[in-house]
Image (tube, one colour):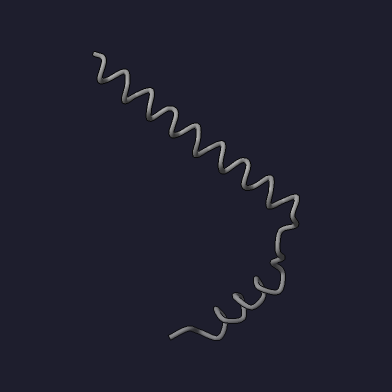
Length: 53
């Protein structure tokens, strides 16, 4: 069962939190996309290297 103290802390966080702006969301999506792409390229290179050897 949740304690009252925990529930108050959760409500405090919800009051402080805000939605990201369009500009912030675009930046987050670009950075995340580049990270996923970089990991994919790295994985593909490793796959090709180990299949050639």
